[in-house]
Length: 83
Image (cartoon, rainbow, N blue to C red):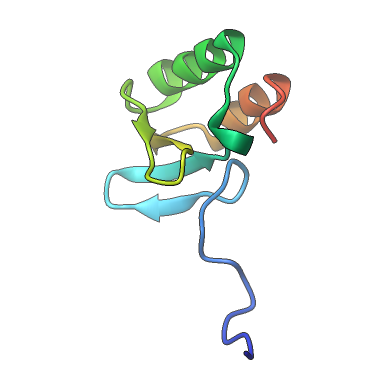
């Protein structure tokens, strides 16, 4: 199958998607597992730099929405070991 796009359209923690409510980051959780400290770091990022509610996707990832400071969120996600 030939690729018709140069970029992957699926958002991640560093490659965000511009949704109607702002930037959206999707943090992948291998095996759907996250440590309490990592979840707390994501909650901090969501509360400080976006919508305070986080979404669990059907594929076991966590989405942060309405992000206003993408660099700060990326730093928090990286520091939490979730890249």
